[in-house]
Image (cartoon, rainbow, N blue to C red):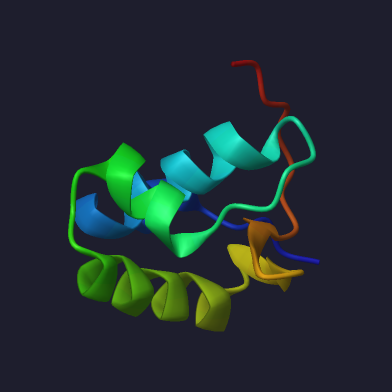
Length: 77
């Protein structure tokens, strides 16, 4: 498996990824409204970014939200 390079993400996608990570680190699902609020962008922009991140495997659906996809690093928040 190839590692996912979050450094290759756009600024918008990185902000959304980091918001998902901050929520998901505790085992919670990251819902669009919460991610949008944390990333400081509209829900539409957040949904577009999440769709990109899902297509890349960076985040995956979980329940009614999202969590991190496969990654090769630890998280500390």
